[in-house]
Image (cartoon, rainbow, N blue to C red; front, side, top):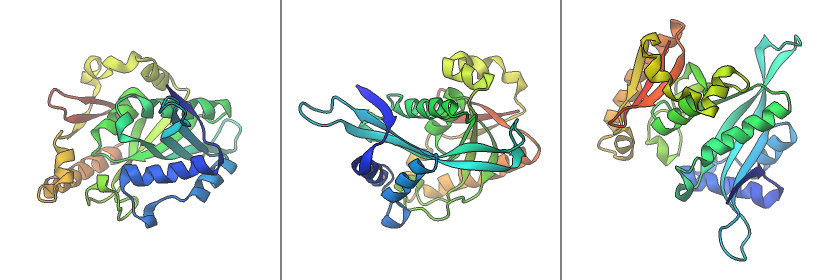
Length: 261
């Protein structure tokens, strides 16, 4: 049984630190320390954990995933009260390898949404790698986020093995928590949006299914870098013209396809 709840105490916050290393293989300089998780909790952020309560007889619940969000303020926009709009930046989400493909990441995001709405926060944003097909499918198709910003080499050099030595380009997911689009995606009503609305898309951007193998193989990595560079230009040009990513699907090959309108 997997339970999602706020993390408590130093031991659980340290488990978040340890899980970073396990999932991404970060070096010490890239790891977010325990005290940063503690501060995030104290200043209005979120540190939510996913716990396996049946990890073994006589054992304590095991943390198998977490989500970290930091509070932020939109300086260029104002809320209905006339004050700058507050939001949450979901900086990090990790799930142990043995527990992936069980919707735990989605459950963590939904728990973030529920907690934020309870506090009157209507927006959560986060960045994700444009080459990560599974993340894009979750963020856009399953959660209903949109994308209209491309950040080139956002974090600079990264020690994460998942980055495959490539630049840390990122898309910015915008999640309007109480919007009709998000509600429809969460309830499953957005499942046919790509097929039924195909004629509405202005353009699409494709990520080949082989991208994971290319990133992991030093000899094939130039192929991944080529896709990154080509798609970077496509996204930048599309966003400059006012287009927004509103759809994502995977074809029969496993390629990921971003749809923009």
